[in-house]
Length: 421
Image (cartoon, rainbow, N blue to C red; front, side, top):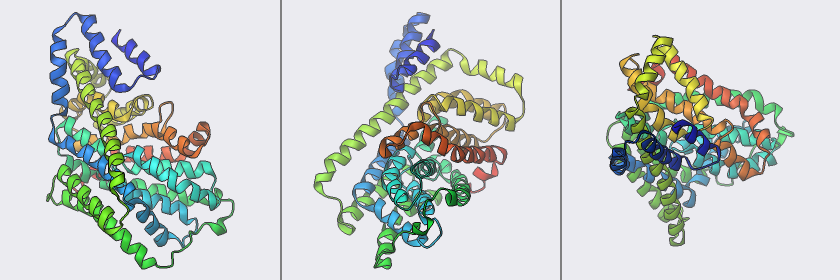
């Protein structure tokens, strides 16, 4: 009964957080166990009483400050300057700019929204089809949840009780591999996607050194985040606070693009976006507790053990399961539901490192951003550029397949995630 109601509420478009909470109440009435009612407030609160979760609103605030403070536009300008003389330069600029922003934002949806608005019109002017330009920009946004800092890695670290810093470091090589394969795919596809390739090089600025200098100041933010965490100087939460302070200084004193009139909008958007994510985490914690109470993890463990005793096969089954669930459910919600069920099996039964498992499942679920019917990243992109949904689905398929290939490679070779630890 609970499962039918869960699927029905999702089908009519109810927000996932409310669906998870409603499922808890239906379970309570169906079983007659009203003691659950007393536990729900405590579980909701305990789900958020974790220091590492403070990094989420801080990184969301950092992204808002970057956009309003002119940091994003200066990083894109530097990428154009460096790569501007290559054939089909704007396609590589799009990927490189996304790589730089991924090391700051940590959110695919925010990155897709920003970069689609900036890059697609320019790529169209240089002869790229709107479908290809939008697909490339949306796919490059997948670097956001992989390159540190990553919001979904933070959430996994909290749920799995593993080091968020280790998760960030483990994402570096997979992120570089994904970037490299996307570059290869663009090299193969871009020549067939431009109408007049002679215009594919962006105009060079009159003062290139000034452009590079302005971007270098902005790149101080990812340097502080990545190196600070990698060498153990700061925690992920402390790095987010430090990076936010740097973004304020750059926006106000260096670029002079951040003004008092912007503050209320920045803080309002940060509060709303943070509330959405954190409320989802809290309600999913309740749902996960109910699954454990109903012995779902034990039953699933018995079922999967009957299918395979091989760790690699188990990871590939998790990959297929994650692709299916991620197509219908928000990635963060799916993560919070799946990890308490699958992680104990992965570590205790199959001997899989929890960091390795985390990278595999996080990357798998983020693919759902680009796969229908939910495909949040797809809907964001088509809303920004006014493109038919099915056109984008068709154009983005090769990029999705490349991302899936990266996840499979990571599942097969754990060293891709664990080598730097």
